[in-house]
Image (tube, rainbow, N blue to C red; front, side):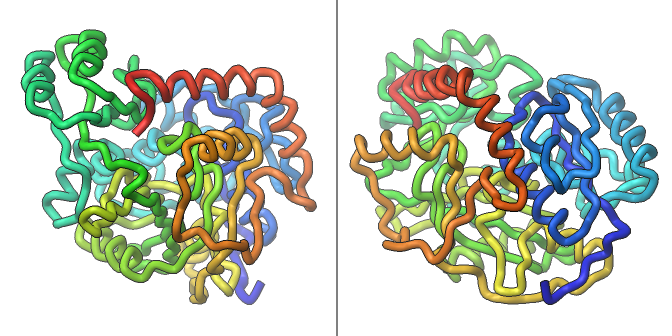
Length: 412
């Protein structure tokens, strides 16, 4: 690598909740670990893929649900920090962790390194309603949306709405309570919406959004790291080819594609809201009106971040470590045409997409290189651990995801 990192500052993967098969955490451990940075991780048990990586110094087994009181989670982080024995860079892999860090900067600042940001901003960005309001304020296109406060408001919306529509949980922290819907849910009719809304109680925690038909749209992603002045030190754009569940879930297959218009849009938005740190954006390009519409803003590292690296070898996690330890972040063009594949979910996604006939016009005909989420020649154990944990329950899990995605008419 043409740059040097501070190997005296370790990294700590922070995750809350039970999702042991997370390739993003493994990717971050490898990314910094290959540079000689000591890596630590919070894991559900000692036999997760992250826990067995050759680049991990130590796994701190700490099963959490995402429902714990913030004070307990902060104390647990501080206890881990004392066991590490020196300030460590925090790398959150979920919204709960990113928001907790932002809202407890004073308590965590002595023992850890992390980007400083307005304490309420990550929670607002992770919220579907908060994000929509920020988009409206700053002139960023997003799907038309309503936020019903009662069943009666759902009825009034249903009387005039154009179907299909999309329902999502209003707040990001669905693990803290029973979610109204299981992920992004496409609802095909007025009767289907009213039937589903009867299960939401007196105060529906949902956003009802216009449906952007996939035959007229393309899914794009932006990953970036912004410094304390909200200046991008690493910014990448790519196109999502497949996701699981189909058209609504996590990225299964994606390519790096240069998109200066999208990069400028993302940089302007981040500058205006004053965010600092790593971001993962999901946007859908609506060919009907020529606009990129922001669907999701993850104020943390995305699971597929290793798709993106510049010519100098910098990804968003490396950029964050370099910047927060006072190093210069080398510039360079992104690896256009590079491909990312998540082995355990791309095959079922491929089958589903072939049946639907959907294609991505901007995907290159041939990849310039491929990054696998799990399999790495210098770190094989996470791949085989993933297989061992995935194969038997995995088929049932994929089936449940597929069934969930079809409820109410399928995913949007």
